[in-house]
Length: 173
Image 1 (cartoon, rainbow, N blue to C red):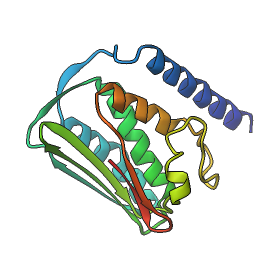
Image 2 (cartoon, rainbow, N blue to C red):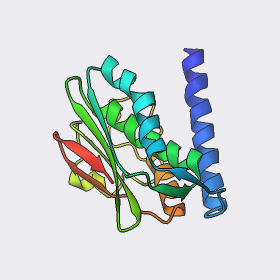
Image 3 (cartoon, rainbow, N blue to C red):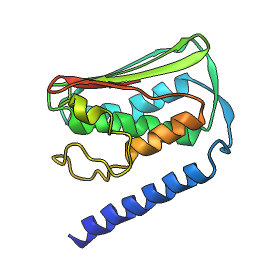
């Protein structure tokens, strides 16, 4: 019990510090040029086994055609990981998650769709707010992950959108 409390508090402190750092240094991250395919490869390596353990089908599709992107790799990766982790957390066994990335008009588009529990329209506009948890049925969430992902994506001059049907799943783009 003490170990679980320690891990939960440690995660909370880490996420608060990360969000504060991102907000204070908005736009001042170290950027590097990397192949976009590196993101899809990482998602496949990190989450394929976890998805299989939950009896969830994970499909990773990379249509970035060898394009390189200028980004803060660690931060962008943490945003993508958060979105995929959420899909895993809220998708029941026998569901599926599709991770797809493609290039449109010189922009990398990443889309993560799942057959999870979904988000009601009244909550969809709140999910990127700090400390908001729409569903408390999945322990371990502090309500900061989507706020951090949004901040990271905006620092990369991007935007994040969420679409969802309650009971049918969600898509984050």
